[in-house]
Amino acid sequence: METFWLIIGVLGMGLATAYFIYRGTQVQGGQYFYWITAAITGFAFVSYLAMATGAGSTILDDGRQFYYFRYIDWLITTPLLLLDLALLALASPGRNVGLIASLIGLDIVMILTGLASGSSTSDFGATVWFIISSVALSGVLYLLWTRLFAAVRTRSQGIAATFNRVAVLTIVLWVLYPIVFLLGTEGFGGVDQGFEIFLFLILDLLAKVGFGFLLLSNHQVIGEAGGGGGGGGTQTARVR
Ligand code: RET
Image (cartoon, rainbow, N blue to C red; front, side, top):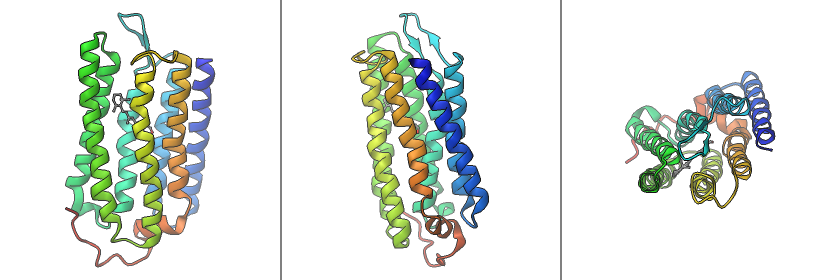
């Protein structure tokens, strides 16, 4: 069953990547949103392929099979998801490099300390790393909720509506990741490995493919956000 879910992941991520690339070649303006989104599902495709072929996991000293390739995927794809959100919300991303770097920096800390928690064979280590990772997640979501939601208010209604939809989806789904982690073999083992893989698959599909469809559903908005119109000349303020 585990391999079956992983193969569904390979197919889902592969098809979504092909679709986002195709759409990107068909539109004018804001193409980079399509390329970033295709890169997100493209990396996940590689990660699921690795896990499905038995390449992305290892057996830990305590006998658990640990899928470390997930964390390599998340290390690359979660910063790209945040980049999509920041580029949509910020009229002048170039003037808010500090904010983008803080979001991505906290996110990288979250994934690396999450990797430490998941692969730790002592309860103490797993708990301490989990707490640090959760604090970093709180920081990411706090910045998203305060800075990016505030920034998008200076943009057009269409951009704000699209941003609100993808950002709320992101906040809800990202909070569910540590819950699945705690339920699964890295946490209290309430669910077996097959079911854990299934739950992470659903989350990954929603957080990457669902996110991509919602983000790119209205090309007019993406074209405008990408500088294809909507004259943002006066919207160059730095967000604080
Ligand atoms: C872990 C465990 C330790 C505590 C926390 C976690 C958070 C993980 C998150 C992952 C998000 C992944 C996404 C992937 C693909 O789209 C590492 C599970 C807080 C938030 C969005």
